[in-house]
Amino acid sequence: MTAKGYAADIVAASALRPGSTPLLRPAPAAVAQGEWPAYRLDAAGERSLSPPDRIKRLGRGQAMAIVAVKRALDGCTASPARGSSTAVSVGTAWAEEGDEITFLENLIKLGEKGAKPAFFVNSVKNALASQLALTFGYQGENQTFAHDALSFESALWQGAHLVRVGRAAHAVVCGVDALIELHEMQGHLLGFFATRPAPLAPLAAGPASVGQGTIPGEGAAAFVLTPPGATAAPLARLVSVRGRGPLQRAPALAVRDELAFVEQGLREASVEPDELGLLLVGANGDSALDAVYAEVVQGLRARAPGLAVGVYRHLTGDFPTASALGFELAVRAVASRTVPSEVRRVAGSPANIERVLLYHLASAGYHSTAIVSA
Image 1 (cartoon, one colour):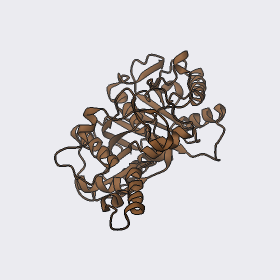
Image 2 (spheres, rainbow, N blue to C red):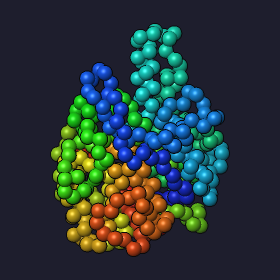
Image 3 (cartoon, rainbow, N blue to C red):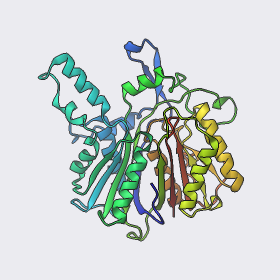
């Protein structure tokens, strides 16, 4: 998924992040465990999901997406118009699977007449994008991408494509996933999630970096895209976005292959490593995955010794579309020419950021890069 040249202007960006420290909550009785940590929305975030005019049947993910889009529109100088000229593109791996599971459980326990229809409506993957269209009156192309750790990148590519080829004047792009108990259970039972409540420390040196597993999280980020050059002073420009899924089940992650993937993305975008102001990576605090990230970073810094490197998942925890929140930080970095205070720098001290490279790798073998430029 590569867009040659400037793919789109980014005229608005916002994020709904969880609280900065993981919270403990009791594990389901069925798994006979104690308490689990997770990055959940804080009290202010939770209140934002329940405005007085909220539609009662909204799922948690839909409510989070609506809040993120509203925040983006509040700061948008080129607001998208209601009607057919505005497209909606949403990336979500989990969608409203919590409501889907509840509906199926009620169907089994209570019978056809007892299962609530609201849960059935939310069980459709496209419920998120459809609800955004209904809430804001956008009647253009409407698509949901559920491609695991490439869900947001797929939605971002599609939104950029629509505005670039003239199929939309604006594209509202959103990446969102809400915590779902079933996924927490799976992650803990399979050893993907840690039981330690300490905040994540991605790419940390010393004892803080020692640990197996990560901590689940949730969040949403939204962006408004316009055709390249359509806006006089956009926040930033999307240069390229690329993604590749696993070539096999349980792949062995090779540093050489990962570094080649990142370098290919730079070549296709005609960007040299020393032209980057910041490398923002999706390291999630898991010691095994962080080790791969660290060597890729080392390989890039060998070509560009002054390259600054930052991490952000100490803010969000780990979930498939966390890259959307990283992308929002990248846009802010380019817009302000400085590293956002929320980003933790692990190398370098950039003076004037004009380009940011985002690099994400999932243990299941999903890889992605995105380049944002002034």
